[in-house]
Amino acid sequence: MAKKLEESEALIIPGKIDIPNTYSAGVVGSRFLIELRDNGRIMGIKCPICNQVYVPPRSTCKVCFSKLEDWVEVSDKGNLLTYAIAYQSHPVQPVEPPIVYGIIQLDGADTGFAHLLGEVDFKQLRIGMRVQAVFKEERVGSILDIKYFKPLG
Image (tube, rainbow, N blue to C red; front, side, top):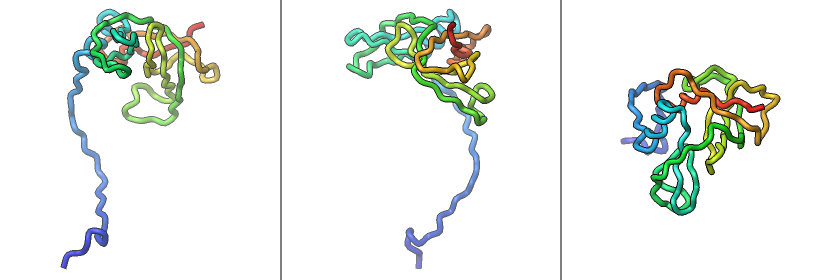
């Protein structure tokens, strides 16, 4: 007679499955990445109803659910809203640790933009510090075309 499920031994098999995939940034994300790649510009998208400017851009306003189509250029400078330092290595990290991740509110945007910080002394990090984007010389259409944000001043 079969055992009840509650009485069965749990079988766990450790393993790793690599699944190749292709990511589509969609219409809005593609335009954002193309502007980074081709023009070194950071673009946001503005809501026609509540005037929120989203960076990175999105297709629908999270406040009033309006369709978003009004593209606006925002500054490559902004304020650091918060940050975290990662000391452990992980295969998906774009650079070797320690890595500083920050959320930056760019001038002209109403939302925070998560990205790497560079050229920064950890002891000098502070909420509200001014930072500026540093673009890679060769850009490929990736969020990492912005190499990192560095402190101003």
